[in-house]
Amino acid sequence: MNFNPKPSRKHAAHDWMDYLRESDGLGGILAKTEDLAKLKTVINAALTKLDLGQLGPKIEAGWRSGSQDELFLLVSNASIASRLQQILPSLINELTKSGLSCKAIKVRVKPAASAWEVKPRPNVQPERPRGLNEVAKKSWESLLERLEPNSELRSSIEKLLKNKPK
Image (cartoon, rainbow, N blue to C red; front, top):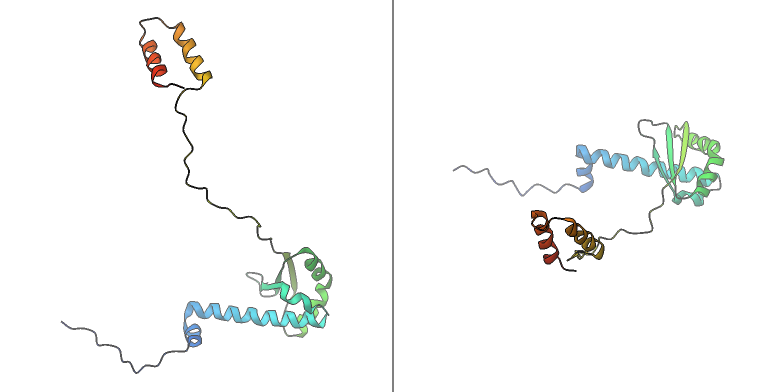
């Protein structure tokens, strides 16, 4: 039997950053993450120049899908969104001065996370009724009175009433 030879142990381990850069799928994710980090830095610098540096940590930024010239800002509440809407032309000018080509900015409020939590129901089976309730019992008895004494239906109803006590 021929076995494949064992790999040589002389190979050095790759740095994890090299692995991310070389890999097709992960390299793209790393590049996009680095671009978003640079974008966040440029936006924070522009907001600081406009005396709104305190808003930087409260903003999530990204490019609109399919477009590299329309910026998308996601904020946590409406007051931040309205303040950003007021300074959008100045912010676009500051971003352009920083070397970021941006023609439009969309500001949206991030939906709030729900404060309640859904819990599964305990595994309790509801108790099934064991007999007939009073209304059903009276209804069957009234039908029984109207049937002929030697009817098959009458005997079936009598069995039902005997087997299904309250």
